Amino acid sequence: MLSVENDREEAGARSPERQLWCAVVGRALQDAMDRIATVSGTAERLRIREDARAWFLRNSPDFRMACESAGYDPDHLRMRILHLIDADGTTRAAE
Image 1 (cartoon, rainbow, N blue to C red):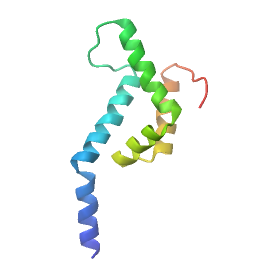
Image 2: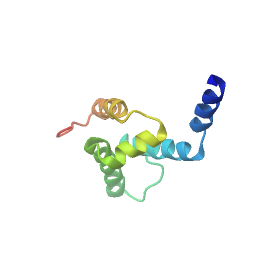
Image 3: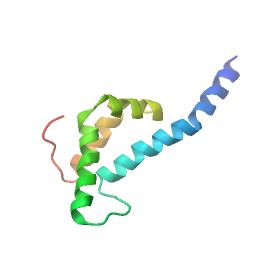
């Protein structure tokens, strides 16, 4: 029985849905750290970065659902990402 449960867990870790949510969270992190792939100008780049940072700061139900769907603990991930944002030289107004 344990083998069947492990097989299901491994299959869930590779599911297309989980991979998609991992990509969503990963893209938001890249945007928050100003690693934006292509943008037309400085103002647009700044808007994308600030939107991504706000998504992590707000700790909204959408953020929590995305994390959980990706297999991440939302509280742990948020804490680590906010630390990265702080280390990047940006101060947060509030958590």
